[in-house]
Image 1 (cartoon, rainbow, N blue to C red):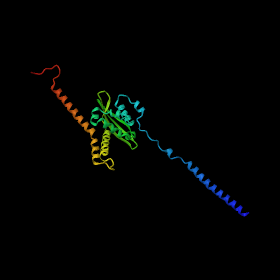
Image 2 (cartoon, rainbow, N blue to C red; image 1 turned 45 degrees about the vertical axis):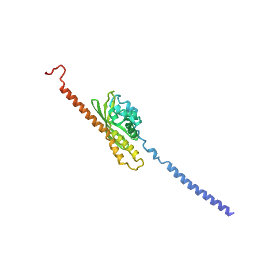
Image 3 (cartoon, rainbow, N blue to C red; image 1 turned 180 degrees about the vertical axis):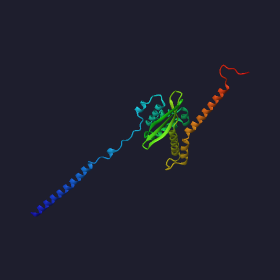
Image 4 (spheres, one colour; image 1 turned 90 degrees about the vertical axis):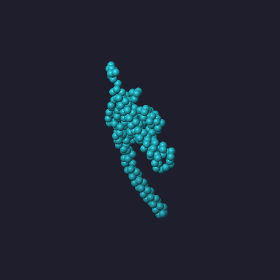
Length: 234
């Protein structure tokens, strides 16, 4: 008769002991659940998209509007439209296909940054937009040169970011052609990249020489041509 009683007491003790352990575990779980979530405090992902409001509040027809529209086209990957924003001579020097590939290759860059205009200076039909390129790493000052085209639109005459884009494209395509499986850039690919970064500046220098020569010829012609209504000695 004693053995069944002892057995019952032992079983009851085990049940009480297990209940106590479970209660402690539940209390600890409730304690953890009441702690604030770390994820809830994380900052939301910042948007770098040029907003529609930013475009609409900028007067149409001006260089500021053209500048912001160009960044919006790049962020939304409208590559052919963005390529047409460059002046025709520069497009011929680079090549439309290469220009579009170079811009498209920089898609992650434009998605992760936005422009903040600092100042716009204008001289006649030329303008310079100074701006900060804002990203997670901070603000980087740079600029973009514009000029008014024959059709009245503002067109890009020099873009420092295009130098980098063309260099990256040349290096990447050369590397893929000669050593696509290599772990490090080939010397020939590096040289091609450096040459690509000089295409735009070489065109700008050549264009400036041509303009200077045209100005000199115009001044020379004006100097030897007598004013209207005067006669020269026989």
